Length: 124
Image (spheres, rainbow, N blue to C red):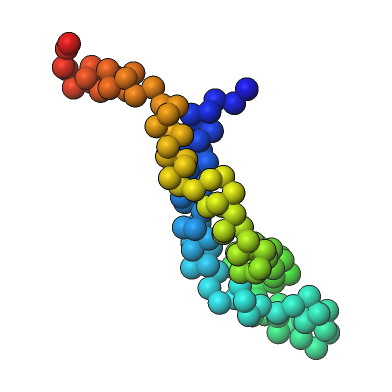
């Protein structure tokens, strides 16, 4: 059986930081998340050379791989599905307040206080 304290800590950490994760992806990828060429563009013989030239990355990253990655990230963070995840991340596991309440209920606060006293050198 899962440890309820650890589970609630993980849920709170994940839900609290998910939006920063999304922000970082959007910052790193830039506008290409919503303006990228489509699969149909890639399949057009007259466009492919331009896409290979301008969409390729540094080193061993090829345009097709980059476009596949951007397409996956678009669906994850810049689509209706991505928006659904942003709301569900916060509310599907209970609100932040509910998660913090469960942490307060489950946490062995007296053990934590005792250990803090030991670390500081306070003896009872």
